[in-house]
Image 1 (cartoon, helix red, strand yellow):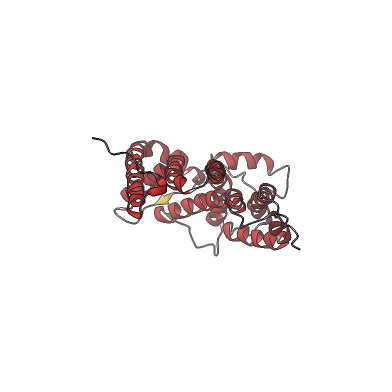
Image 2 (cartoon, helix red, strand yellow; image 1 turned 90 degrees about the horizontal axis):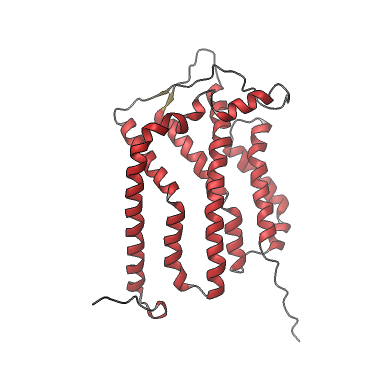
Length: 272
């Protein structure tokens, strides 16, 4: 005899925990499968993808090397000899990096499914009009997360990494980049940009819940610009205006998108 799913309106606290437990089990099973696939494929993609920014063959460097001669404010990436050797100083670092990178690759690939499982858990507690809005926000948020990760990988991390590698405090100092240092900066930049690009979906959800309105974002636009400039300077410690603007412009566009998609403040009816 099969057990029927309980009515969401009559579910107890323990019933909700049971539903959440099965969601976690399904997510863990899917992560295990994709972890094995990522672990198997990692040796074939690590050099070309993860370590792409360590060589002058990286597509961003080639593009900007063609533009650096025509536009003087663009950083000079014309050095075809640029190459960074990543060193390993711990016995187990390569194996542990293989494990951790495979796990995070599985998380990135499964991000839409993880969001879907969380949506199934939250869905019974929402009203019909809220379900439609939150479902749209989840889909939009997933798309924006991937766009942010792509911006972090293609633009933010390569510019920051190359500046820091080529920066010298003295002529007798030789930079030797460890594997752990490279990977922590790589994932930090990529995931930070992925999370930053969640700004419009988050603003839209807060607007649907009545917490945020368009007038608030317009009122504090100048304050937001200052904060976004500070965030761009923190994310890209290179210091040159061009690299900072490459980060600031997407952040500012995200803010303007948030301004456009949130609701206007509801007009309160006059009371006699």
